[in-house]
Amino acid sequence: MNSSIFPFLVPITAIICWSVVSMAKHASGATKGAAQQDPMLQAALTQAEAHATRLEERIDQLERILDEDIPGWRARNAR
Image 1 (tube, rainbow, N blue to C red):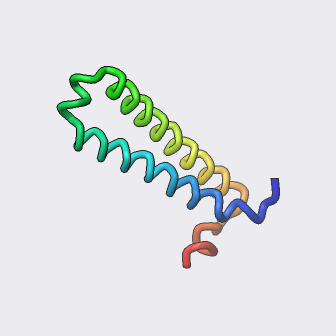
Image 2: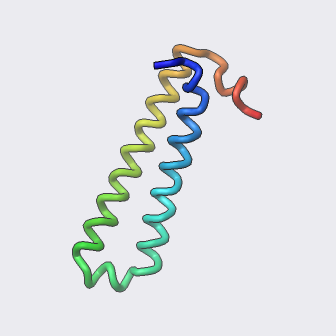
Image 3: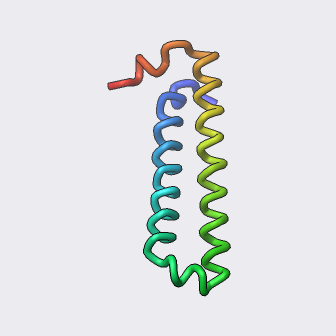
């Protein structure tokens, strides 16, 4: 994989993860009563939350890898 995409990989992944979490929170808050009545909706929300958690863990892992391989990458990319 081309190392020039690494600076963009973390922010893009973070935005996607944030979007999934925001949608899950909005859906659970807006349809709280409906979710309790619809087990399929509740299962979808639970699955989305688990997916968001896995994405957050992957972002953390990518950041750890970048910290080890490219020290100071955060400072160079903070604009």
